[in-house]
Image (cartoon, rainbow, N blue to C red; front, side, top):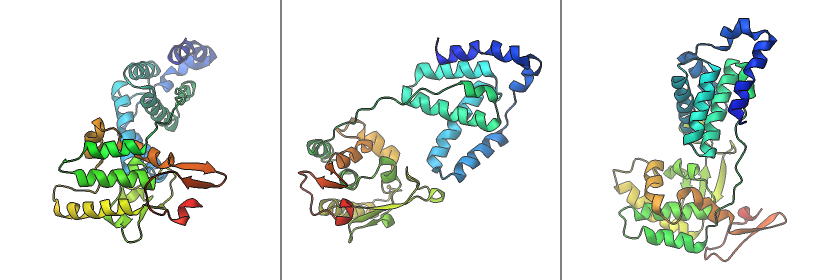
Length: 276
C-alpha cells in the first residue's frame, strides 16, 4: 500500500473519532487572499522572486485541480496525478509546497501525507577536458564570448548556476579578479545560504570576462549579463551544462584537513583567501 492509499484508508479512522459530524470543516474553501498571504510570509523569509513565482505556480495548479477547496480525496488524486508524470525530485518539490500551504491553512489531515525522501545522488564528474570540449562545442557561435565567460567563471569561482544568472557587471571587479554574490531578494538576488559572499577567479577568466563585457556593452539585444532561459536552452546539447560548472570547481580541490589544494589545472596563482 503506497502513501496515498494509506491516507485514504485512514479516513475511516478520522470518521470513527467523531469527525463525521464535522466533515464539512475538513473541506474549506480557499481564496486568492489566503494564497497571497502565504506567499508574503515566504517572501519575508528571504526567498528569491523566481522561487516565489514557482511556488505560487505549484500551489495555483493544485488549487485549480481541487477547485479551490481543501478536499482530501481530490488532493490525493492530484498528488497521484503528479506522481505519474513528474520525476521524483520535481514531484517532491511540488508535494512539499502543497503541504506547506495546507499547513498554513491549518488542514490537519495534511500531516498524514509524507513527501518522498531525498534521492540518492552521485556527483557528476566534470573534467578539464569536459570544459574544453564545451568551449569547442560553441566555437564560432555569435555569442561565444558570453558562453566562454560563463563557463570559465562558473568552473573557476564556484558559483552556483542561479548565482551566475543573477550577476550584474557591478558585481564583478575585473581589476581585483573578484565576484560578489549578493543575497538581496528585493533586487532579485539570492543565495542558497541566505548570505552574501565574495569569490575569486584567475587571469584566464578575467580575460574572458573583459572580452565579454566589451561585447555585452555593444550588443543591445542582451538585457542581462547571463540570461537563464537563453543559457539553459543553448547549453542543452553541450558536454557540460551551466548547472554542472560548479562541480568542476569543487572537484578541482583535494580536501586535506582544513585546507584545499588545487589540482593540475593551468590556472594562475589562487588567492590565499580561497585556501583558508
